[in-house]
Image 1 (cartoon, one colour):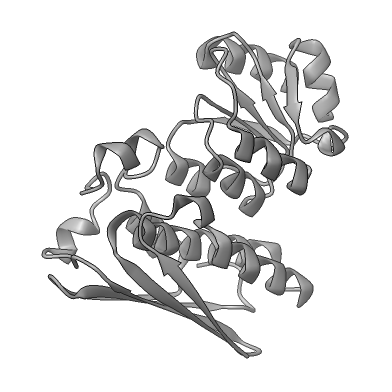
Image 2 (cartoon, rainbow over the protein chains, first blue to last red; image 1 turned 135 degrees about the horizontal axis):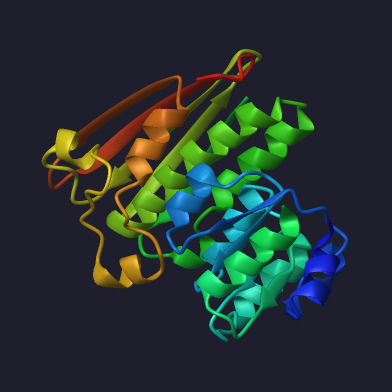
Length: 110
Length: 141
């Protein structure tokens, strides 16, 4: 499954990082603690979070994540989107809560 | 090969720069991806600790064919009780830092779990030094 497939299936907004929409998704991880994601997310995972600052992109890049989904209608900061574009790692958005979004994502990735 | 990076306390905008540079270098050298992951986890956590807690610091990275050695020396408040600081969940991070999702008390345990050799020493009121060694040719910890 590619990032673009979950954008379509979950009706996600694409904030930035359009060049990375073709990346392959290998799993998911939901957390708002950066060290938790650093230590436990697998390469290729989609990260579901309410964090919006640019350090999110540092983690996503360092751990080779496929995309970031920001929940609860939150929007990424400008510098977050800039880095997302530079790294070609999409930042996506949804009005759903982390719980709702993670449930739906899990169902389609299984 | 050896490299040096400077880290400024409180500068979250550039947090992760050294980790990113080292990751690129190891990738170019064809180092195993599991080893790179372990290096990146250790270095990023240590780098963010300087940004979150210290005034400034220096990262020295020494690379040879078998190992990567990373020494992070900071000027800062230091750690009074290292044993306590090593416990999962213990953190002295500010509320602002915690709001960003840092300061969950997972950094030092993450380093410990991913390093082949990890030494930490500190003098309260002066600073903290971390020495992290990872073997480049053996993926498992």
